[in-house]
Length: 302
Image (cartoon, rainbow, N blue to C red; front, top):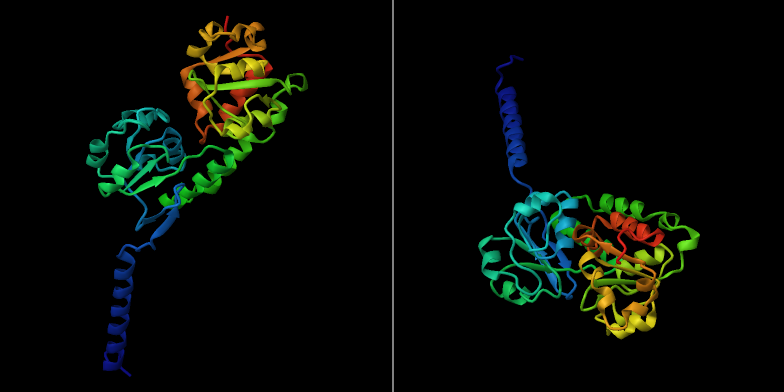
């Protein structure tokens, strides 16, 4: 039978058509199934595709997005997001209380990441923006948030990031000598004073180091305290910012606190304070700052 037989030509043409159809099909973008995520408000957020333009209104969320390898998708961040360095050049759009809604809208994000306490969430949604409200306050929260962001952004890096954090926190007890364990500790977040209780991720890290937090979990993760409460609790070590530390002895009654009397007040720089109060990928660094403080305060107030 000759090579030019009609049957052979028909078979060859059919095969060519099939191959062309296959190649054309491969060239078409794969349409991902919509992803549905329940945020911390209990609302289901539907993402038709992985977001490409993201505005983050919380520093810990900004840092986690970048740690997941999606920093290049950020088009705007809150005023306090400053790590990694590349986010400093992005438009800064306010904070929890004063987000610049018009600026956010102008950035045309397909996803806004915000804390549940961000005041502008309802207005942003009313203007048609998709908002995922998630706010890590405990280590379990952080694990959940990493998984949620990994799912939303489709990075496939969530498990590796969490494993890295777990490894950084492993063996925390060995960072503090037995003699330094068990000390009564007060961790001040701001001068109001707001504190980190046993229920917060900060409290959980302190517990891993063997410290006794004077602020109980029953008050909530980051309660505002009556200053008299701290005086009565008489902590042996105080962790606070450098700005607060220089004025701490001026507070009524605080000179009598053991930590102030014995100059066991750790004064953290603004950059160090950022690491300590953000539940994100730098938790291991924050743990070591706390351990150094318990071993011997790194910046004692006079």
